[in-house]
Structures are given as C-alpha cells and as structure tokens.
Image (tube, rainbow, N blue to C red; front, side, top):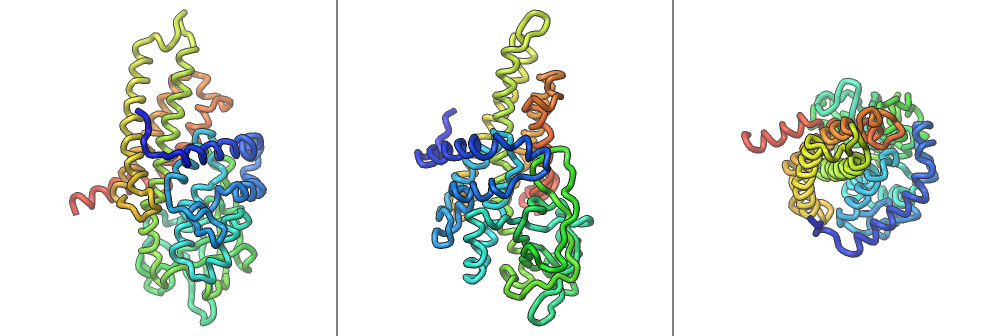
Length: 383
C-alpha cells in the first residue's frame, strides 16, 4: 500500500538524508564501530547539512519546523542504512524538546546555536545502577548552596555519554526525594567533579558511545536549572510520547528493511536443488512477516500523522506506548526469523542481518521496556 503521509518536501528531504549518509557516514562507519564512538566531525557535518535541530526556531539556528514527519524520515533512513551509532534521533527528538520548551531565553541563546550546528552534542542522564524505569529510585541528588547546586551521584547506560558536551541530569532536589522531588540540572563539559567512566561494551550499536557518568561535588550554577524546580517528573512525562514514537518509527523501518533483505536472499539461495523461495514454509514465513509489517506500518503512519505538529497534535502517551511496544517487539521477532532464514550466513557479522539482529535488540528495553508499555496501556483501560 502506498504511504500517504509524506509531501514532496519530505521526499526531497529523504534524498538529502540519503546523500548525507552516503557521503559522511557509510564510508567511515566500520571504523567507528571498531573505535566504539563516532567522530565529532560527522556531528558538525550533520549540522551543516541542516539535520540537527529540525524543530528549533530559526532564530537559534534550527530548522524552524514542528513537523515530526521530517524526524520520521531521518529515523527511517538511518535505520535502513544500519547506522544507529550516530544518535541524531536522541539529540533531535528526545533532548531537543526539553531545550526548546523548558529553557529560558538566556539558556536558549547559550545552548541552541551549538545544538544546531553540531558543536554541542547532548545527552540525558536518567538511568542509574539501581534505578531504571522507576524514577522514585533515583539517588543522584543536588543540595541547594545558595548560588549553585552541589550535585553528587552516578548514572549509567547514558547514550552519547562520552561525546556529550551538555548533559541533562535528573536529580533529587528535596531531602524527601520521590518522583515529585526531582529536577533537571544541566551539566556542561569541563565542569569540575564531572567525570566519565567506561565507554560500555554492548552486544550491538557498537559505534554509539554509551557511558557511565559520575558527579562528585559538582557545582551546577543556579541558571542551569532546566524547567521548574522539583518539576522533572512532569517534564519527563510530557516528552515521553515523542521519544517512544521515535523508537517505534525506527523499529518498523528496521522490520521492513530486514524483510526486503530476506526476501531477496531466499529468492537467490538454493537448497536441495531448488530456490528457498519455492518452499511453502519459506513462503508462509515471508507472508506472515509481510502482513505483520503492513498492519504495523498503517498504525505507525497514523501515529506519525497524529504527532505531525511536534507534539501539538493528538497522539497521547497510551497510543505512543502501543506503538513502541508493538513495533519494537515486531522488529525483534522479524530479526530473529529473518536470521533463521539466512541459515549459517545469518550468523556471520559480514551479513547485514547479523548486525541488525544485535543492533535492534535494545529497542524493547530503552525508552521504557515492553513491560512498562503494557503497564501504561493497562492502567489507562483498567485504572
């Protein structure tokens, strides 16, 4: 079924993204995977190409559009290219809204131009060694010292953790703590007491730097409070729908691409003197995955339309959770089945299917696990 959600300007943007990937990313990606990190130069190149800060107002150097369809195009093309290490979606769709909606005018002028030109790479530090989805378990804390906050604690699994110049830290700012006692504090590169731990060794997404972060008596200026004091819980909940939709968009794109790769493979691969595609079991497998992808794509495109105006649309947290749960679980299932259809070759890292299998495994975990998505949906229906 032909997709109906994109206009000619989105198609033109897709060609721009593909050209950028071919020129600035694909020739270097294998080396970045060996290094465990992408180059800072590619972030600058992305900024120069206009791929950063799509929703940031033009006065700060951004694209000035709240049309989420551009972000969807970016996510789809990076997914099809197999290049999740350059985390533009995290920067644009997850961290960007915090800065554009919560930052003061002074903060916007200080941070957003660099955010858009690639000189400021961002991260958000929420997860801790003992606290993931449970915000009430956060132990990182900040004491009010008059003209600054004194920040102490540790975070882990932080995407862009090594490269980040600006980290939004979720911390307790009241002795009582709890979800309602959290604030967002912005810690900048070079701040005394801010240290980075290991670049963590993951089973997939090898080019994406994922780090431990440590804060030892870090003096965070009062002017680096982002949003409302003790208001982090509400701020985080407000932006989760877009984060989860962004993950879901990449998930369905991955599933569709894996299906394409595998369909071509079984047409050309022979076993017992016949193409694999001639076997009924193979045809049934392909038919089932194609149907699941088509049905999921219809729902995802509807969600993209609902959210097309950068959150001003009508997509709610429940339907975003449905999209995230369903699309990421489909991606995981399709990756496994497609690898099986490749046989031994699917287990070889030189084949795209093998890398997609390990790269995509995190999708059902970050941004809220499948179990958390089901809990959100269930509560909405049953109270």
